[in-house]
Amino acid sequence: MSKLSISELQKVIHQQNIDAGWWDKPREKGTLLCLIHSEISEAMEGERKNLRDDHLSHRMMVEVELADAVIRILDYAEAFNYDIESALIEKLEYNKQRADHKKENRDKSDGKKF
Image 1 (tube, rainbow, N blue to C red):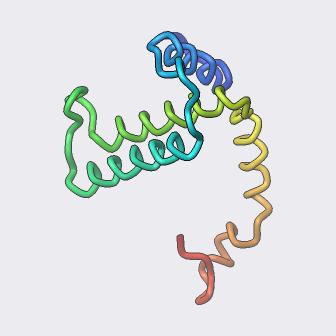
Image 2 (cartoon, rainbow, N blue to C red; image 1 turned 90 degrees about the vertical axis):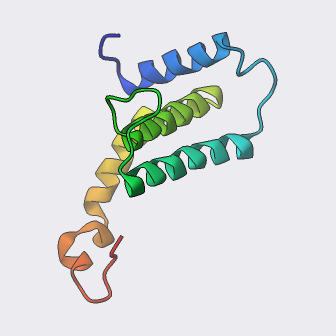
């Protein structure tokens, strides 16, 4: 697959999931968001135990589970007409100006640590 923009990838992922029958019936947003969370939890487990992925054994589990989370996020976004690519760009720009994202403020005793 050639390099795609995030918006293009979002469409490809969603269409692949439609073709696979995942969207034959209406899906509940809360359940879908919990599935995204489950991928992050699996990534944490892979990182904690330094595991390789079961299916793509040349890759670390954390890498594959993070990819699964992105796939689920982009599928969700396309299904519900969210423009993730533009939101990412806007959020990155906004974060540059946030006081709690500046190193000098994070380094303070009461600064944001994570």
